[in-house]
Length: 284
Image (cartoon, rainbow, N blue to C red; front, side, top):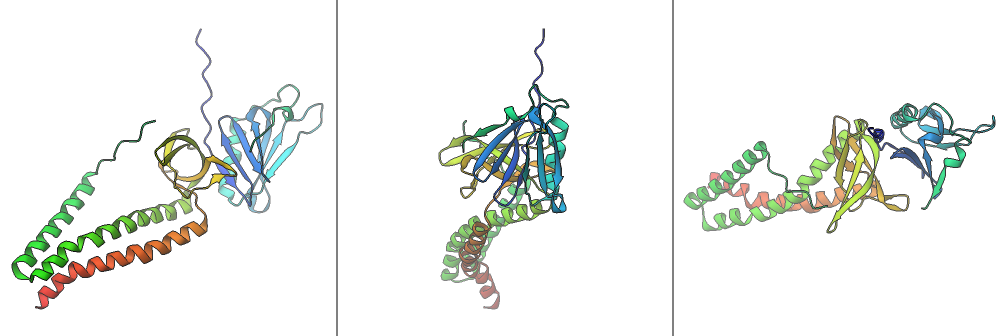
């Protein structure tokens, strides 16, 4: 006789408030309020609804017993869209009848692989890399034929500050672009620790369609509450595999200043050492 199919995992949607959080994990709702974390199985939930100003908060009602209503938990959120998603998923997945004895007894108060392979370059990236190499070699050859030895040395040595500057500025620009996109249409979820490789930590999250994805945690990503094995991430619903870790505003500000001051300075020095030599050659 075939075994019963296990229910599919719920999307790990999260709603953060002012010190409080609520998220889905497994077949349960987890709430963290004032340092206390509660686990409410879906079987214990009578219903969920968006409440408060702008419908940004969520109220979870637990099944009562003996005709008396069960307890209710409210998390004051800051995002009406996230609150609506959370309520929809909970109400769709919860059972329609009360467990024996109500749901209050099911509520728990809980205390507070090998590394991924190297990513290959896409055809577009290979074309860009080849073009950059041709410009570099061609510029050095042109200066060697028509310029001064000092100009050749400047061109050859200038690749180092340009390279270092791009290492700093490039990922920062890509990350800033992703954050701007996700700020408008991203879905916030909780990612759970999966594995570690050296100093790198990898987490997994579940999207709204039940797909499971992996993200390498940012070293500055803070754990949810006091739990370092859970972090907040935001993913792109159109491309669920693309996600970023939620970071404190102060962290983003300091990173931006560091990129602009240090990475921008290196790029400026490299530009003076390389393309500027061609300008001097043209006017000589």
